[in-house]
Length: 250
Length: 199
Image 1 (cartoon, rainbow over the protein chains, first blue to last red):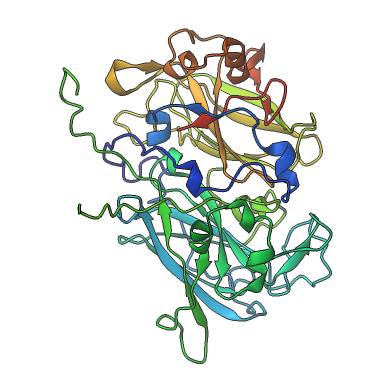
Image 2 (cartoon, rainbow over the protein chains, first blue to last red):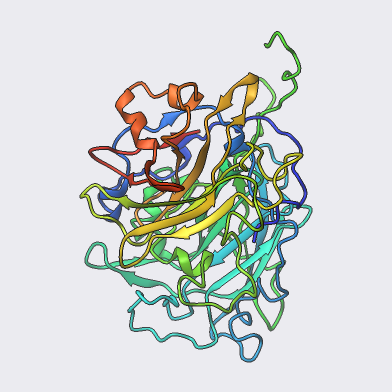
């Protein structure tokens, strides 16, 4: 439930136009489902309007204390999920380097065996009765977030005959305007399957793909408990509005 | 030499995959319970000023098949053209909704308040519309589009005016089925391909 009374954002300028070269190609024959689902015609270029510059706010959304603890949030603390315990943490920034506070970060993932809690997932790996596979949290004043979870397993998927997804966690991030909306995936440092994955390969620029690979972070690991991975996310920025009060325009 | 331009670059998108609902609409996915409450289940959260409407539709791929696994988010202003958070906005309108395509029929339904015309930069006015963001397996970066209404004056809308191929304007305008009821189909590719936004 979105709370419209929550912190009304200060007026801000238009969104900085998106650079498509930073993003995956929409149509890639190696990722077969994209072939029939990618728009064939160019998208319509436009400057953002209030429809994209405003967006849902979550400052008053009731977030439970276990919502960002995937080890316990499905079993309600009765029994922990099975697998290698990890902390995933990072910051949400925008393109101008400013932190994005009070925004919703949601994740979902497979369990330690590589299976999702979804009716359509028929992989042999067992469902973990104590793992639901989703979490959420609001960012702090400095844009920071963290999740305690278990390392997801890699799994095969029906694309080419023997394709495997690398270990990954899906991330959904809002920012402060509807035009900043982003869904992406976090991969894990050192996973050899990243180089074989047709979905990861939809990002043509290797340096951009590397930005989705979270490094092992011993500084945030807890001895005899969990390892940590750090994953920062950059959302679109806003241009300044300083000349808007000049009636004669620029 | 010049100063270093130290702007950051946006994090690349990845597909939401086929299981987006377990993360963002867990109850719809059959997994209620991870959270005590879910977000954005309804764009109207109380009594509202204006007409409550129902929009149904489907999302077709390039083969003409109504896909079954998409998740859509909507964002809109209230009946008077004010977005949530703006002074005077209708407190009953959250403006934000998540809805899924029915896994059996391929249809989606959005029940909401009919938005008003909204003011933009430089004295522009946008015709009433609902903004959509569509994610699914095979969509590598979420697609933005809008629903406009056939019973409103769309002639001066700045976005619709930008569409050079005038027949394509129709892809953004819902059909009226009856009082308060509309149909809006989205075509990802091919004949009648919906206009998607690069903003």
